[in-house]
Amino acid sequence: MSHWNQLARACVAAVGLAAAAATTTATAVADEGAVHYLELPTPQLLDLPAQAWEGDQQPHTFSVLEMDRGGFRYWAWYGLNHGRGIGLARSNDLIHWTKYEQNPLWLDARWPSVLKGADPRHPGTLYFAITRDYDTPSSRIVLATSEDGIHLTEVKTLVARIEHERNQNPNLFRDPVSGRFFLTFYRGNDENWFDIVSRNARSVPELDVATDKLLMHDNETVAAPTLMYLPHGGPGGKGIYYLATEIYPNRYQNADKGDWQVKVFHSDRPDGAFEPVAGNPVEVDGRACLFQHIFDGTFYGYQCKLDSATQLWQMEAVVVPLAK
Image: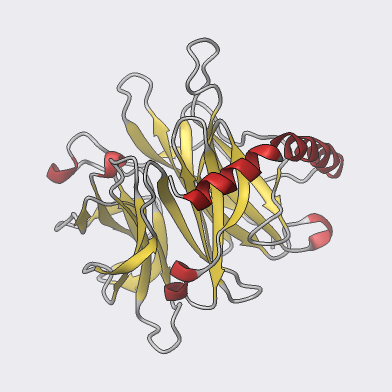
């Protein structure tokens, strides 16, 4: 571990009790003001027959864009569990999906997060943040670009490898208020140290040199961050940012072990300070990795669910019409 990381972790640990107390107080206030997330309906299980390269794995993540190409209005880039690779699926209704016949797009890759229209000089270029080396103790995040959504070119490393520390679960987000680009990701050791980290820059390629900002730290599992902004969804009709994460209470305990859940936080800024919404967790029973999207005034959330019988992940969708 680098000297910088040792110092940073020591500082976080030193203020841990104070931060916990502050969070408790803020949560009580939030409950009084009833800052809630969307009311999620019963999830719909997506029918996504496995391709040969996928084996017994289903899509674990789902990053969606409206593209209107190749006979499909929507395109989704997905990652399999265990870093097995990433693929493409397409749809015209956001529920029924057809996988691209020539998948995979990449092997040794996981967790693609994609933006379009990020470069005004090249509006057709797609930017991807993708996890590499997932099946090692030192995963990293890379930047890739594509002109057609199928052929991806790795450009550079966004978050470098750190010995015995995972950097993964990237989420690319363009703030509609400031226009800046945010990379939010998980950093930790998958045992007793879990951080959610944010970077922001004027352009996506500059995120590799942007300063890390610690959004939250925990000794129990918190990972898989995704951001969403609702312009009139907050208290008093103000804009609000929702940060969805996955948690796993008591993950490494033999007694009273929990399951995968989705916990959501809110803020008036895309990089915090984030506080838990009232009514957490918003999803339970082995659900995780909620990707938040809005299309035509409707929320589409895509999440994975662990099948207790097979111990394999499946992809679900939750659909919520938004108030106008």
